Amino acid sequence: MTDLEAIKNCFNKADFGKTFDSKQIKNIVNIKYGKKIDNIIPSDYCYNITNNGIKNYKNYLHIFINRGTGLYEYVGENYKYTGTVSNKGATVGEWINGIYSSYLDEELSPGNSTNIVTTKNDEYFNTSSNNHGKEATIINLICKYLSDKNIYFDDLSHLENIKARNEGKIFSFSENIRGLVYAQLSNQTKWSKIVSKLKEIDKLFFDYDRVKILNIPDDYFYNGIFKLKCGNIATKKQMISLKDNIHMLELIEKDYGSLDNFYESYSASRIATILSSGKYKLRYIGYALAWEFLRNVGIDGAKPDVHIRRILGRERLAYSNSINAGELESIHIIDELSERTGYTKAFIDAALWSYCSDGYGQVCTADPRCDICLISEYCKYKKNLNT
Image (cartoon, rainbow, N blue to C red; front, side, top):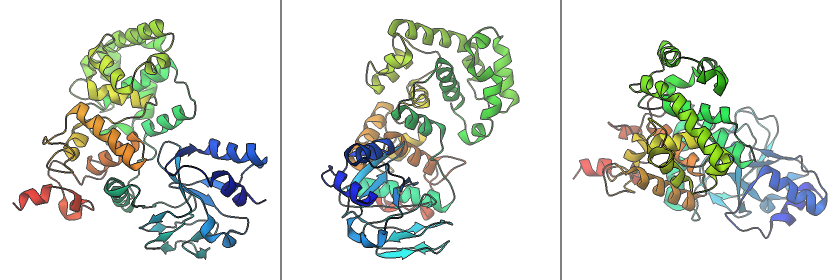
């Protein structure tokens, strides 16, 4: 039995829309058939099956689409899609829409068909189907625009952290301090100016050694941040409060046995509320920054900042009746979009945020660039201007 036959037999009764991580997929085949799968390669946007007489399988390929943070959605062998696949220097051939191609730097535009297999070097895979509807199309078009502009967000640290938690990682106390500091640095500033300085920031904070931090004067940290040109309007107050916030995390750890136990004790939305206004309130951490902190330690969710709230508001994608969706409302909207599309909440948030944010897509800004927008047909902004 070939690897492909084993995969087909293992997953032919899987529920459409069910998600697996790569370890689960390989383990299922290994447990049932004793086969160690080497020919399934995690790709940027789907699984790649390259060997074992692939030409003979055509319409029998089972596809797993990457939904972000290490999760792959089973979509079966009859998944219809539209879009393009841009092959940038793949070293193996690939089977796409009935054509086996080993040409490099070839752009393939399959149109509307079934079954696609790509390599891990593919930079863009756009899908839309009746299974996911308008919302998936919006996210996919945003991803297309960003990819065409060589703007990528898959390596954002919080997405990597969410993937790591899904794979079983337990975050240390130092990593929690780092997540808190990163969240505060993101406050009312362009993240693009922070990201290039993260290694220097890590060094400034002694790689988040709590003992060292607690024994260093506050001005060392805020002066260091300003020297790196990474400060914001609240930086001085944030750094003066850092020791108090570390002690609060220590109290949570004492009360719950571990910070992870605390995070698992309530819904993520409830945890964000507790950290921003409840019993364990962290100083200079509001609801949006609480979400940023949680995502930095691997909790899946959205950060309801100005970009997200505006694009979800009634004058843009109109998921809210308000001009800017409320903070909690934005969380609920992203939760619903995740349910409808199969994408993780953080992936949807990252796509929308990157489409709007300065230093990234810069399309759906306060003064939107509707002339280059790929999702304008789903947006109310130009329609409102014309009424």
